[in-house]
Structures are given as C-alpha cells and as structure tokens.
Image 1: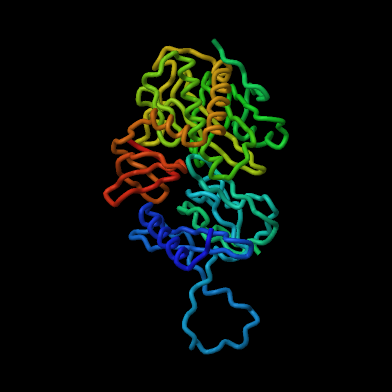
Image 2 (image 1 turned 180 degrees about the vertical axis):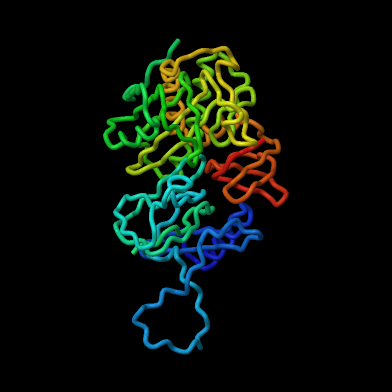
Length: 163
Length: 246
C-alpha cells in the first residue's frame, strides 16, 4: 500500500461516511503501513439524544503530580486526555451493553482502588444474548471505571483504566 | 432415526443441579473436549440478567461448554448457531417444520409462543457456555413471565410430541455439531442466511428494548456482526443487546 497524504485524507473521509451511514457515534482504526509507521484515526460525532455516554467525562489531562505551584490558568484549556490512548486502558472487544455486576442487585466485579489479577473478570459486555466476561489483561490496580452500569459501548471503547 | 452422537463430545447427566451453566462453568477448567451437562432437575435456574427461568420436571435444561477460541465478537455469534441447531433438533423430534420460527437473537418460537430460551456466557480461557432450556412438557404460566413478553408454550401441548430430556439431547448434540461445522467452514454469512430464512417478523414492525430505550421500527435484517437492524423513523438503528417484542 503506498502512503500518500491524499490517500490518508480519502481514508478518513470514508470513515466519516461510514460513521454517518451506520449511525455510529465513534470509530477507531489503526492502519499499519510498515513497522513503526502507522495511521491512527478516531472519528466521532455528537448524536442528538445520545444514548447514555459511553465514556464518563474525563477529568482534565492527567497532569504529573510533580507540577510546580499551580500556574495561573492563563493557558487555554487543553482537551481532556483520551482514555482510549491511556496505556492502562481496557477496551471493549465487542459492541454491546456493559454491566458492572454479574446480575442486577449483586455487588460489582470491581471498584476503583481494587487490585486485580490477570484474567480476573472486570465487567460484562452483553451482545446477542452472550454475556462476555471481560478479563483483566494484566495484574494491576483499578484507576478508573469509565462506564456506567447498563451503558451502550462501541467496539474499542475504553471501559476501565488500570495502573 | 437417531443421529450419531458427535465424536469427541462428552455428556454428563445430573439428576439434580443448581444450574447446568453454573456446573459447566465449574467444570470448564477440567474438560477434555466439548461437554454437554444435562440437568434433570435445576434448583436455581436463571434467565438473562438474573431473571427467573421456570424449569418443571420433564423440561430440557442443558449447557454445552467448550473452547471455541477466536475473538470475543466472533464467539458471540454462536447465539445464532445454537438457535438454528435447536430448531433442527425440534424438527427431528416432531417431524414437522411448520410453526417453528426464530426471534432475534436466539429464541425459538412455536406457533407464535416461546418454546425455548438460550443464554451464552463467554468466560476465561476462551471458554464458551451455551445454556439451553426447552419447555418439552410444561410451559410456565403467563403470570410467571414478564409483561408484554411472548406467551410461553410447550412442545407437548402444541404438537403432542412427548420426548424425554435425554432423548432430546441425543438430537440436539448432533444438530449443534452440524451447524457449528457449517459456521466454522462457511462462516457467519451461511448461518445468518439460514437464520434469516427462519426469522419471525422479518420485514415487519417490532419493538426492541435496550437498557435505556425502546426502539420501534421495521425488522430489516441481521448484520454481519449479528446485530438486529431496525429501520426507524429516525433512521437505521443497530441493536446488539436487548429484548425484542412484537
């Protein structure tokens, strides 16, 4: 595949089209051209009457704690950090409905601050009457839970951030 | 003629069990191949998201556990494989095809009533558990099911066919193996085409209820990911999780 600026633009346009046509809210694609050379595209759009936010409002970019005495807020507000880009993000392997507990009324699989082991179930994403247990990809600590119980999630949507 | 039991597939018959899917999950780490757990009595049968599933004696309750591998999104398409296999087993049991329809994603209807329910769980180590309940002898009363849901029916009352759970498993296990082989060899499209040919209310208005909303529209198709495609006043809508009402 030859890589040109024009073909990248065409690719992004095609994705935007796909988003509209299929009534999606977000789409993320990684195109590998060669080793260490790839295009990462994420297109999203605001929906009227959006069905439950798939991503909880992200607090402002994770600022290093070591920052000096707070500078006056002169700088323009930076865009919130994209949780999907967080190296500790666990993303949804399927489009569906996310549940934080095994069944209504039961206690949640995890809470913020919990230590989890590799393979431990973090939550469930239901699709086609299949309850998909989402395993933790590694041992770690639950830093954030980005979705609410019963939220609609897209493929690739960040669900949990581990550290 | 009873088809042959599929090669390499195990069978465990439990006189009584809390739930065949729970037992399948407990045994999953120890299985040597695909294994069916048949429960003659279930003391804690569960439906989707903890809903009650009534399981009177003589009805069928079994769970298949195996490790199909593949991506999670691909594994979930077994919903359609299982409902087609169940329909095939019911045709083998009754000798008739009429009245049997499939409701998205995997309910089997007979004469417009709910005859069976299927619930899948995709767990650790690429394990998939397919729990199948069929009202062979008795259907729960209307009071036991959710308001607005399809009325339950039994195979016995609708067709006069009286079959034991053990005999029904002898039909279902080979039927599942056959549809699974079709899925693995020819892909989801082959399964989807057959499923759509047997779908209830295709091209007709239906309601689909998700956790947050209810959508009304025309049931257009099932897409390549298994999602229900509805044509609504606000445009096309894909639904991956929810309940369908007519």
